[in-house]
Length: 599
Image: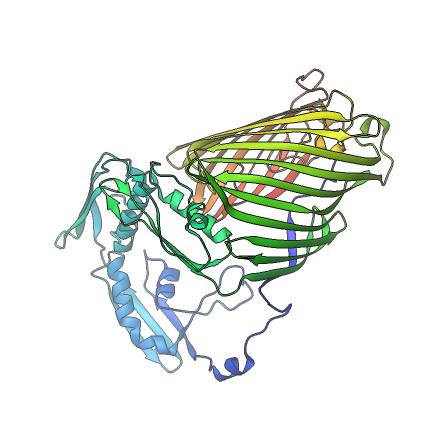
């Protein structure tokens, strides 16, 4: 059982860069030569419907966030922006539907005073929609509301993005706003024919750095010819290209179409620096005080290869490792396969023992965005060192040395509409591991099987998701493996009332034995709904069962957790803060923080 702590991290110092010193400062001479622009107070009066903060912002007024509560609330405008106030304000009022608004601007050496009479805005009288694609949720206008031109433009852009995300690139979209200046009303018309589904054709590498083959770039495309065209697949391809770390600029041009077939052209330029190192000192409530350094050499020996080093020290986790990556090692059945090598030393502290490991891992992998698989083997020599005396019925480890050799394979089929924040689709994966625990007298075979499935469905803005896990470890009941090989649960991806690996064999709905099991079942149901901007509210239910024997749940019970939290959507996935409570014992509860989607 791993030490239980709240899963939140506070980084005290994180300094990244290639050749970046630990403490960096700007050019003092340049800073001294830059004169600070003079500002004067500004006051806006007379507003009734419009938001004053929005008007201040469009005028370029200096403001501060609510987090900077100690700063003065006085609004100030740079003097060089004062001459443009009238034109800027007129354009903003018109864009918000207030064509008849009048205003005065009084400028003195010490103050700018603006008085605005909004008068009657142009309002939406009618909304006519004719579409064979669901666009109602994107049209946010309501009858009787002021007509805002920027909102009208954003709606059209969102409809186009939604069509492309679903694979419709040959749509016919017509949006009109018919304004009656006498009545001060506008009639909105949205007409859409989505057309047929578009599909990817062959990709052409139009530009690439010297020494990089077409295969390296094509192996990063997260689609195959014949797949339905979606912007999500293009974005995933951008991310895969950037992961190589060798390109300073990449463009995937999808403008070239032949009927409903999109034939992308890829342009890639090399970045100047191919070396990167990071140094960080921080505190993490999972591992304590942590010092970590990394070094990456991109395009190592050419061909897009990467060599990396990692060194980390903390009270609970220490690591010294090296890794090597070879993209597009070979091509088989019109698919590119990559090589991954990893090896080093790893130490991790648990409640009653330390696990020290020297390892080497090698695998071949493939990923096209829908299908992904890895096939590899690993060698490990582990030493288990007892650090405290557990209760007799909670000892889940045996001190000494373990030598493991095993092969493994993983297969993934991903049909979610997004990897970072899916709203519809499903995900299936399977993992199988077979190996030997080498002993002085005999070798003990074992195998591990893990299955995982996700299903996500959205209804309007509401997203519902369910996730299931099942795993079994068969070692013949000989307990010849290190404790870390057995099955535990707990944490953000299994049961959120508990810390990572805090749940062992589940003896009752409120108690576990602290010992890893050989059968694991886990179920999660979750719902999320937007509440404000990029903030979402979520509720969830987690259930976990871990049994002592393989393929058996006898004498084991479900540990059930309910809870909720807040999600903030970022480009790399949601930042989630959840609070989980054991349904049968509310005293068992926990906050958790994670980046990434749990479904």
